[in-house]
Length: 196
Image (cartoon, rainbow, N blue to C red; front, side, top):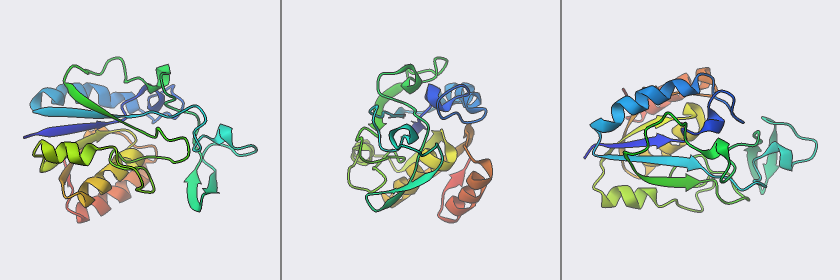
């Protein structure tokens, strides 16, 4: 069974959004093109409460992209993005969604950040994605989306830990920090990830 996971193709990660990835909207046409090739298409949504601990606006005197230690963990503080039920949390309007069978939401706990589609950043809470994929008989997972160096990267790392083979669809993925993402791709290739 061919399975595609589209990570966070949401308006706030597109140009003009709260946490915009440069040229992030360019992946939409490619995602639309490849979806019909899959037996199962899944998607994730960042889905933050308004007072999420990762928002710089919730920490007096601190700015986006600064770091702060919270509950013993180093936390990057982000601009507000993907707040539940806001326009910015919606998928890009040009992206096909009729093929998407299930949507897994993450970052819903205001006290903890969540990059991976599988677990929060401290691996305390599962989204249920791993069990869903195993029940569907998934062995290989194709992954794409935004942002390549953050949510896509951590999703792939957890997918490997869960025992899945992973292929990264490069043309349907964009990163916040392109240089960092190139280094991560070399690391992932060394761990058996195929870049396609």
